[in-house]
Image (cartoon, rainbow, N blue to C red; front, top):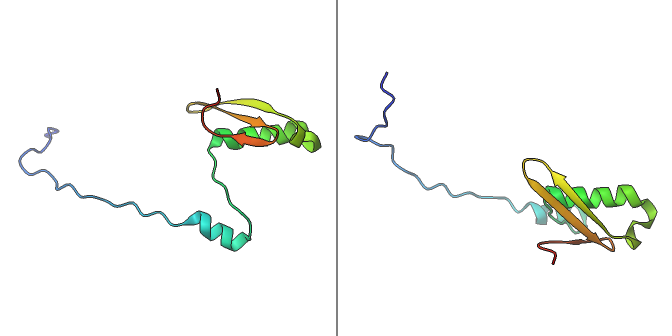
Length: 87
């Protein structure tokens, strides 16, 4: 078998336009509540914060690190997610 690339008749390149449905708006309309996106590290930090502090979570701050396919983390400051880089 010949495994060399076919340079004589290459396949035509096509431009594929990715169309994403407006999921956030649809969920907000269905649930009647605001919907917020987050990445896995921030979501894990928020869950760990609430799971650890429970009823007093709103009065506490925490820092979490997450190791998965990459490294990530989240900072919860008085129960608010700090997104982006924290100085």
